[in-house]
Image 1: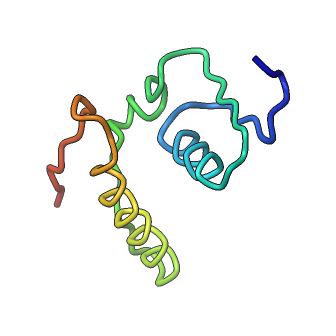
Image 2: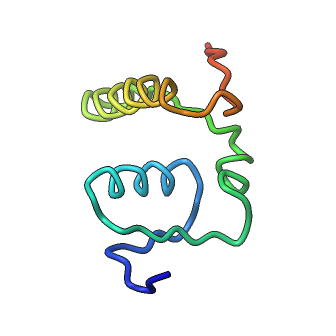
Length: 89
């Protein structure tokens, strides 16, 4: 095992994991460090919600885009991946 990485990400929550996936997809060698299980920290405490926010037009556009990316990613994940599309009001 080589100890050379192109990027090191601290935190394996939803943001760290998403960044790691994109960097790996781009061909970079990625190391993700976390003291606990993947998605077991702040992401788990917040229930892993992806929320479309509308405080500004830019925030709405970015959070809407993030939600669309997540929905595309779900089809690539293993069958035992925990995912509930429950919606909120």
